[in-house]
Length: 125
Image 1 (cartoon, rainbow, N blue to C red):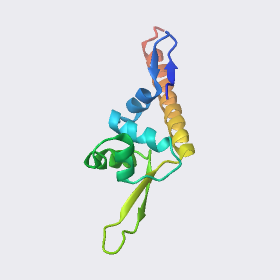
Image 2 (cartoon, rainbow, N blue to C red; image 1 turned 180 degrees about the vertical axis):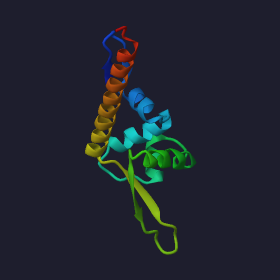
Image 3 (cartoon, rainbow, N blue to C red; image 1 turned 90 degrees about the vertical axis):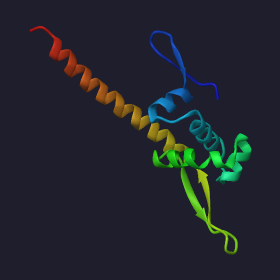
C-alpha cells in the first residue's frame, strides 16, 4: 500500500509511518497489522511467520503488543489431543478504521483546546 498523507506545507508521510507513530508500534508490528488487515482470514503464528518470512519466535511479542493496543484480536482454538491450544489472529477492518479515526479526532480536539488556551494565555490584553 502506497498511501501518503500530505501536510499543508507539502511534506508527505506514509500512512504506515503515521499509524506507527500514533500507536508507538514498530515496523515489525506494523507489518503484522498490515498483513492481518490485508486478509479476511484468521492467521496462526505459523501462517504469519510463513507469509512475512520471519521466524515464528519473532511473532509473539509484536502480536501481544498489537493485542494490548486493541489493533488486532485473537481466537483460541483447541489443540488436537493433548496439544496446547493455538491462537488465531485477525482484525476487524471497520473497528480498526473507527479506532484510528476516533483517536485522531480526540487528538485534534485536545490539540485545539490546548492551543486555544495557550494563545489566550500569551495574548497581550
